Length: 353
Image (tube, rainbow, N blue to C red; front, side, top):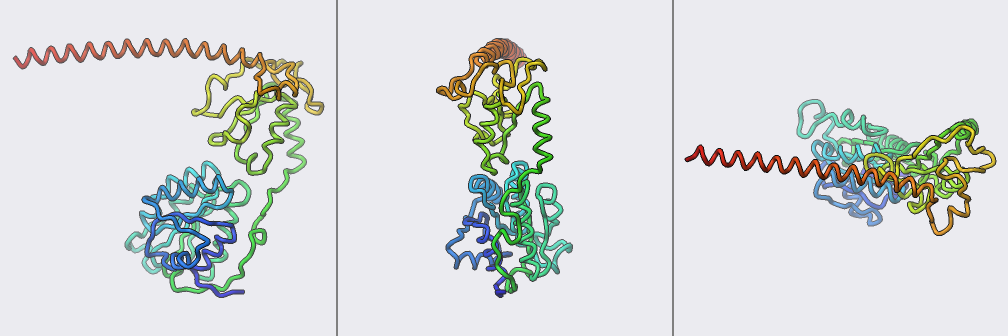
């Protein structure tokens, strides 16, 4: 068991998770961590213009590299400025680790400089929000935070370390590999859950596959596409996860939600119960639009089945007509507004005379 400076210990815990970048703005509450970063060139501290940028940069890095994205900021506004970016990471299940150097424990709850209940503020948008009150608890709570961020459905965590707990303190700890304190590999689904999913798929009249970040994280992208091809199931992607399936695939409908492609997200009619494809054999297609489409046809030059293309063209025509109507309405409204403005100007001129 090694005895380390508290700031050095924090950096070593991050290095165990393959962290190479830390984002934030320099503050006096975490000087020992900055000293450790100055001596250790394997982790780079990137000084940003605003703490909100640090949160978004950590979020983006975590999504791309599948490692924790780390923010290191000072107390008070340094931490509150992170909130929007951390909330975005929470919605996206992104493993962002927020480290905040807080005011001294003896000054808390006394209206001291930059004293605020940050734990309560960050708790709704994090998987774990804690405050370290003793130097010897730094290893335990740092590992708990990293475990929460990287295990199961991932998400951001918040750790506040007061300056009198962090600076000029030493801790005794054993440096452990991540698989010693958290699950380092995704757990296989329970067999009952797999059977239930197969039952629901067989019973579905209009099956639709929503593919998100969990598929990418598990490396199951090719498997999802193969299942969709075998059973003729259209695929859509969750918000911000357009790369989960090949976008040129004939069965890819488009992204989900307000930012999605509306003409592509409308399926024409429900499949009659008698036309359902048996799940076990992976035979006929799952929708009338896809009937008769073989796996070979799905791979042929990325060609879209004719029935799907016809449906999309029909929807596109409707949308074009609606767009023309909106444009005409807008032009009429603009003409009326111009007429009212001209009339008001004429009346004002007469009044001034």
